[in-house]
Image (cartoon, rainbow, N blue to C red; front, top):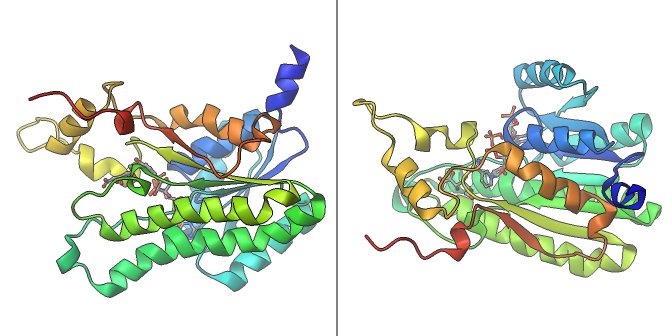
Length: 267
Ligand code: NAP
Ligand code: GCO
């Protein structure tokens, strides 16, 4: 039994989870902490950071929070240097920080399109570039990119987000290709539809108290018959962050309740 636990243990590891102040990032950071990792996280808002530190403490976790926008390369490098100096080399990077803008494509400004690409795709590139030299020096590293159903599928109003998440899938594969020989594993997690602040508008009750049409649509499209919860992502994250996945590289693990495998019920 001891050897199985060892396979999934993160004792002695330092993990940096971007956007770890709430939602999926918070849940993944909590899971990695449960497996033994020291947790660092970042976000842009001081209020979110303060609240998160209190929330981690309630979970018995002494997390280390940093105000840092993943699109600000100088700030990212300074944050990684500070973490390395104070907590030790970063063993695990979870590129979780991300935004979405739901706007019909022809109504979307190029500025809005660029902002989503910048945070959801360029941000992970900047973060990976900042941690890779340390991982190469150490002779090991784990990078987990939080992709999406939209890494595989399009849908109306999310053109920028789908383009970014499709690109993030291929960035994942390229990091695998370029750094696999340095014993660095870079994989993706593709969550299905998860109940977080980001998807709250899609689950909002209607004025008449009925469920949002999109809520009903997603539940009907999911073989599991429900929205995912952030807890559904904890096990997959520990797997991809641990020695249990040392020969898994360039893979996108979809945690979607089966949506991608299902054509949908005949009306
Ligand atoms: P969320 O609830 O909106 O949380 C996003 C987190 O990222 C917040 O902590 C936010 O904090 C931080 N953040 C946003 N922009 C940032 C930036 N430029 N620099 C640093 N931190 C930033 O989102 P979520 O639902 O947890 O989703 C997390 C990730 O999973 C995203 O990449 C999302 O695309 C992906 N995903 C979500 C779902 C879903 O159904 N929820 C499904 C598939 C994939 P600040 O605002 O304080 O910076
Ligand atoms: C949307 C949703 C999705 C989820 C997720 C699905 O508007 O379609 O926000 O994009 O966030 O990415 O995997």
